[in-house]
Image 1 (tube, rainbow, N blue to C red):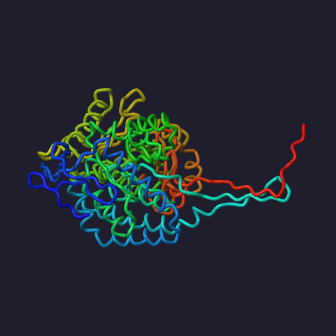
Image 2 (cartoon, one colour):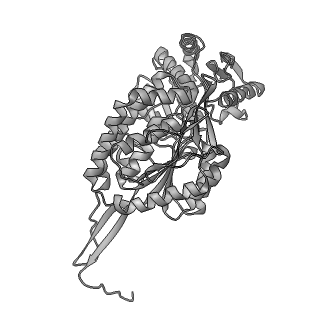
Image 3 (cartoon, rainbow, N blue to C red):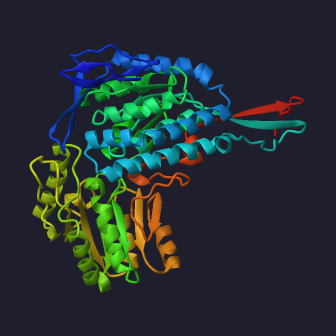
Length: 490
């Protein structure tokens, strides 16, 4: 999959369909820019509807044979993928840094997570694919329930965790025996291309994995063309709630099931018995990591009044240690959007607690860490995902008010609870309307053996390990009857 196409001296990331790159069309290219460097770094070929159809056709044809590949052979292939990811960690991290302007730590961390996730999925294939023998009601008969691959699938991964999220969205359906049309992000096509390279280098057959990307203005028509195709049996989408609603509507139109992991308005609850200094440091880290551009970023900090002043003091210390640094937004437009959301919150009565929502440097893509307070329910930021290095701080009277406030959102992805009383932490965790609760750590949590997914407006279904594989398997019941049952009249 070596990149050989050039335009204006820059590499062109191709569409990869049925084992080969499509021919270069210089009239339909995507400019890929680095916000940190303020310049173009690549071009990418944008797909047309006919390219999308070709990718589905290739996946559907490959499914006829790949779905019959034994589980242990799929496991071997995925284990090779993990090894290749680790062997190319420097390259993968560099591409992600170049395209998304993420810090080096985030790029390297993505590769580590991805290799772990792929290995865990590989190790879970047999468990996920094991069927059942339910007891039948009819005498002299028995029933079998087989688990089979659902078919060819469309997976759509975002740019913000471009390595881990793309690897996971590809590995789980391949483990199940599905074939994949992978829609890469137009913001990081080189990174996603490198991920696809790792799977193909491991030995996955031609047509099993196909990559396309599209200009933003063409994305809707391309996506619907794929989903509407009868050969596509399921869709996975990881991204914003706004786009997730559109994907969900299109999928419903064509009766296609969807696995979605969307955004969050993730709360960090600080109870009065917490280690306040530790909690403050974790809250700041959870807010600013990758410029706040993570679906599990800390968006709301909820602290009991009796310890609020002391906690806020530690919050100031932890923020000051950053010296105003929080990385870069993936584009200047993304940073501007996050900055405007905070500015609108201030106009609607919120006040600055730490920081003043200022831009840093000359790129227009970097914001200072900012914490605001006095955010009321009618304030736009109250229930809109920030996706920048900012969070709202709320002071509450007690645990019950903290739970009510944490649940007062359309989202439900993750939440953190800080307390020295673990039983209290579990009690509160059981009442939070989120998919994952973390006690005494960040709101960001993704470990490969643990199911990950949201509730409410944060998505449907689960990822990771056997839970992710299950999403791409269907149960088929086979009943063996020795003699035809008699049907009485009553």
